Image (tube, rainbow, N blue to C red; front, side):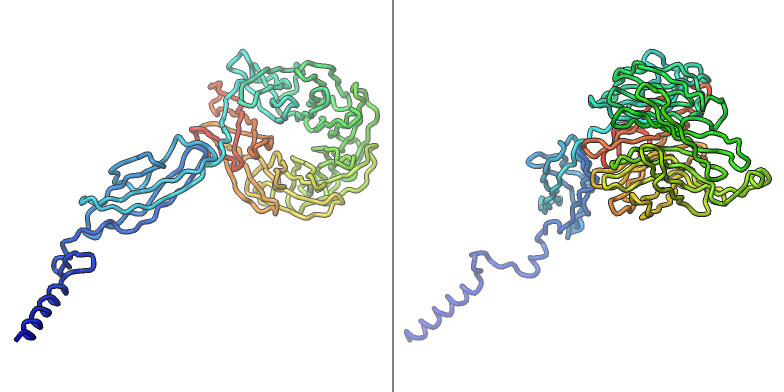
Length: 506
């Protein structure tokens, strides 16, 4: 009998233990489980468009298993940026540059269940980009003008060189000294009237600045004061296309200038001229180059090997003056000459194809290669920018045609890439300045353009800044002739061509 009671007792204990879970909680039946509210499901958070002071946070909508709409709370560090938000995006601003930030997005359903996703990002460097509008005069508002060159001065400020006109018809050589923040230090004009279409170029010297325009050479000190002015009478003919085109100074302060002249020869229309001047501006020698119907010069540099390198244009189709007068037969290609410092040709080559090429820019790279380019006009009259790279012996290694209509200037970047500045929509109603960045393998990395409503924006020179960003001096011309709103635009851009401005900045 005792054994029967023992069996019953053990059976009762066994049955009571079977209904208790390991954590001492009573198990829930399948019907009861359907009453439990589950937390929001997993979702993905992304951080995009990070700048030095902003970041755009976005996330997928978190699904609630019961079908309720979740709300979101966004944390940056320990701070709450937004609470009970229903949108799936947030701009985080007022950040510091080059800083690592962490945070989380917390999704919460109406019953208070939550699920959170962490995020992390690093802000970019603050490149302090800007666009400053300056007048072409320190004391007058309504002065028109344009900028041709931008040069960094030894004291860390910048020299913008171009032309200005107080009455809209008489254009004088113009220099503005601007500090790194875009504030004008001084502006000066030089009363050698030469019209707005004559070439103007400048070169930084040991004592200041050399400027040439039309047939004048002006030497300035570091404060923009005239040291001397020379009129080169060979170019003083008042004829379009007869003018000085470029100027450089050598190690001994000797001056080399190039220009174009008409020719009196039977089968020569234009000839290039190379001239050497003393440090005081006196003519030492001059040489003439007339190897085809048209031989013109545009840019000159002194190479690291102490040679003269000249970029020009040359007729290569064998066209005669009579054939040129009776119909179109000319073919102009880019023309590179390498000369000794005494002006003797070491080699010369032409570069081009069936297009009509107009030279604009020439530089020597750190590795000794030469980059040059300009405008290329097809037989259908379409305009493209064109750029070449050659070795020091003239061997072509790169030839690029770009849909940008103009390349005015090309500079080398610190990683051995290239930055080209020119004009977009050069023959449309509204012109924009355009930038193209090439990597060290010469592929296009990015393009940028900038324009303003009812204006033409033109930029002809660019500098690479110490932070790998860019400095640009541009000109703005209002399309309304009665609206005096021409400005000098001084721009600081980041390494990707972006600068802060409320207008279009593509």
